[in-house]
Length: 211
Image (cartoon, rainbow, N blue to C red):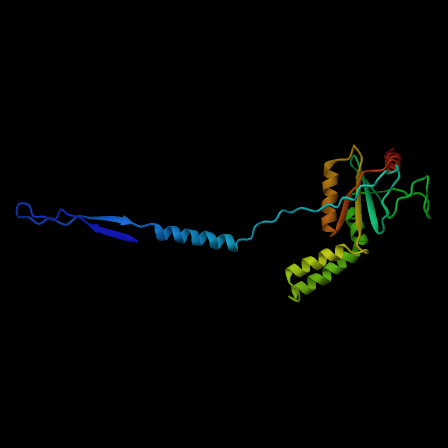
């Protein structure tokens, strides 16, 4: 608040009246209180930006592994990156030394085109994507809250029917291809992503495809 202090100097001199001099002092205490109140209000009502990251799942370390100790997986796709190329195979890996019911594993080449990785992931993860559509409808109709939607979608990604993805690279793989693949996995709502060290037999198979 403003205070006006009245001082002297109003005496008579030579029979003439002189105006009284006044001095002002502004008290800034209420302004400081108001500034803190506004600061508190904006801090409490602001929405902080969340980092846009994708969590990666690393498998447990295997004790005394053999060169072809592949993880026992179901409903999964394994991507192998080398140079500017990307290969994949579905399901369990079977080396030439121990072929499966359909023989040894064969690599298929793909790319980041419209009919490449995105289509492959969309078809493989149809269970989660279709479930997401149903959850989104409930969210739009306000039948569920945002937090419930996120939790239910997260649980959906952990189901056995949800697609799992393993990523393996050799020493010639490019960082760009790895990042592009991670982006595609995010779009396809892949919940379990595991970068895994490439096996010796897989590396040999990859070199044969690159010839």
